[in-house]
Length: 528
Image (tube, rainbow, N blue to C red; front, side, top):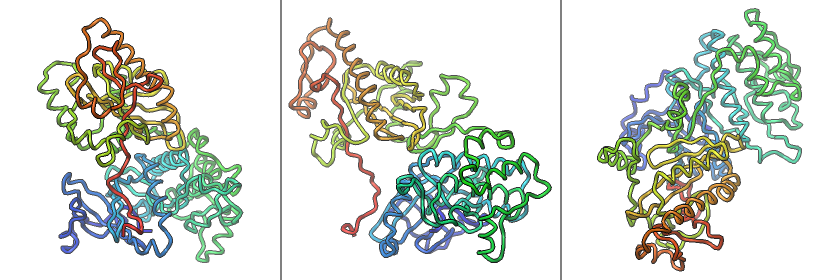
């Protein structure tokens, strides 16, 4: 597979071929210079003509992968890259396709390969330690999500303009679902100089232990400037790897030598694991755990200084592109001039409402499914946000707020990462709002459990509180025509004044989900 980012640090992406730059990819990306290529794909530098952002686009020949039987492989790579969103891993932004090509739009890493840096000579200990710390952080993140890279080497480790490491090329990676009944992988893969001895034994191997062996070889190379196991004859090199025959140079500190001995242990059962590495004295020196979150489908780093203040930490938001609804909210905030009061929610129009459902079948508005849900309430925006915060605190979730959006993030690390839920409030009428809830990350089963045991009961309580508050007011006005048409049959309680809501058999708020359809997809054979 071709690499997904720049493979040559001296490449000038702006000096592109006229023929290549004259074409726009799907009207959105200006294609620039070729960065690298492989058997099935080519990688180009490209620029988003709307934002000006530089990206790397991996162009895969669809006919070749169909003939090679690699369709499942490509789908798995996409799934893996969406699962491992981390500051030290090259990001996949989106996937697009035409009848003949598949396009991976990825983060462009300007610094080139770590290999180019170490090829000039061994690195200083503090520099090598920083790279190794970032590598272990990324690898540990992958392993916690059941992803194993299986081809870690300096050529697949890239450096950004700030000198931070990025793990790339998950073409040989595997997920825990691929393990056999013995709980091990059996595919022989990897780069000879970095492959673990148990892979050579062909008796099955633990993906996590194999990655850590490769990390040990990488660390040795960074500090020594050469490979721990090397021979011009590949079979002779395999014998050295299988026996674990290597020597640490005299300039290695005792702590480093001990760590490498544990990493390059030929017995996977006694090889050091990531929790032990994190507690290792050599590793811990100057180590800072990265704090980050995903918002608007982008990675956002949390500044440690902001985390000192809980209120500031809760309001940390992404500085990435502002959507149309964000612009409306900003305008309302400026016009409101109401000090610390919340802005008016973005309004929904007829097209927004229709888009909630597949095609024009509005019955889908009242069936719960997928990872998105919506409900209608007359509760004030401030009370909705307070209720969401209350629900989050009950289950020890962290909360981030921005205007009429709330992000809830769990602390428990699951296979697919912590559960992350985004809630956004939209104005339906002057007295009614729609609350849209989406799963942004984490396990779907955990999300469904959270919705059924925490979110729904909490929102149900909010509706009851609103009912109690409004029970002393005047009789309710005629329900809005739109709700009456879209929700038939529906029940409007006579003892509720200002709150219009749709009840189920258990009197919980009825959620209004939308179909989850990505605008970018890989066409099937029938599509082509």
